[in-house]
Length: 234
Image 1 (tube, one colour):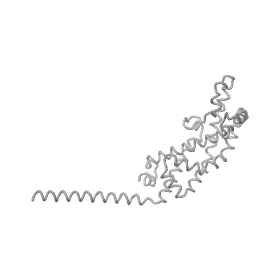
Image 2 (cartoon, rainbow, N blue to C red):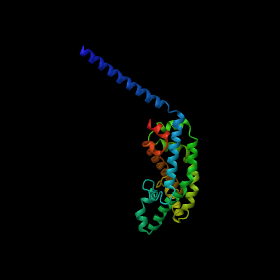
Image 3 (cartoon, rainbow, N blue to C red):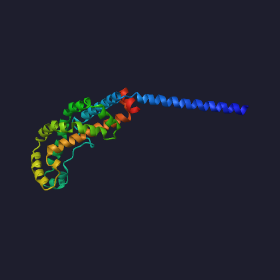
Image 4 (tube, rainbow, N blue to C red):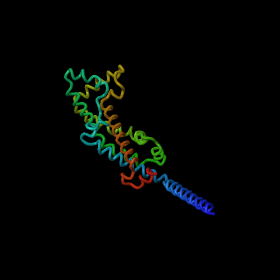
């Protein structure tokens, strides 16, 4: 009899444990199912908005590009490879001025991107949200590039051009680069300094947005929005 009693108790405990696990699983599934498409899209818009605002703020200030190794805009490769020779013929100061001016041009242009970035976020469809949520580390960058790159290039180019025009060697560079591109010495995007700087400015902007998004995904609670914790935490 004692053995039968022990077996009955053990069986009862196992049944209770299984019931507890089942209840937990059902509750977890119900919690995940409560995350609607609207919730996901709302969470992502919040994430991207925070990321975009932070990226623009960090880059659109003095030293935002110049002093940040992750986004610093170097001289075009064709110029960089000839840097030693150019310095030997007395162009050291001009090269330094050019590189500084390029980064300052990007810093001056980036704040103007905020409106277009926010517009892209507001117009984000549920399908866009799903693709970004299910995508990898480059999902945010891919989204912003596809939605804003062309318009941002058009918007930022005149600002970059006005800034780089203040440096005398810019015109010289463009003239030399045009010749060099015809002989395959430069890539087409390097042949025009303003286009090169604008492209690099956008690369830096998208990079910083992606970094912000990764940070929020990793710790959604720290972003201060419960909906982020609900979606990304789940």
